[in-house]
Length: 122
View 1: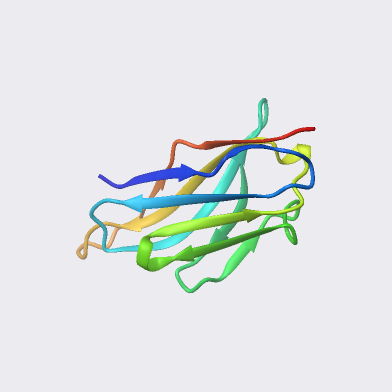
View 2: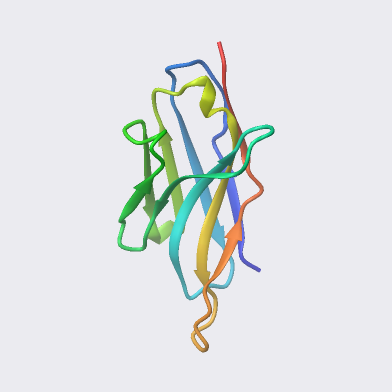
C-alpha cells in the first residue's frame, strides 16, 4: 500500500539542470531514509544520494558538488536537484524509501518507485 511516484525527468543539454521529485503515499508510521538511485543502459543500479530523517546526506563521488538531495517531511517528498549535468548522468532514476508501516512490531521495509528517465545530450 506504500507507493512512490517520481517526476521531473526529461531531456536536458550538458551543463543544464533538472529537479526530480518523489512523493511517498500510503499508510505509514514514518519514513526513515530516502534516496535516489540510477541505472544506465547495460549498467548496474548505483546509489546517487541518500538523506536520513535528520537530513544527513550521502552522495556518490560522481555527483558530489553537482547534485543536492533534500526532503520535505510534511509532504513526504524527497527531491534531487541536479546541476551541471553531464552525458554520463543519463539513466533511469529511481526513488527509494525506507518506511515503517506499523508501530508494533517496528519493521522498516524498502520501497521503490517506477523510475523517471533523465537524458543529458546535446
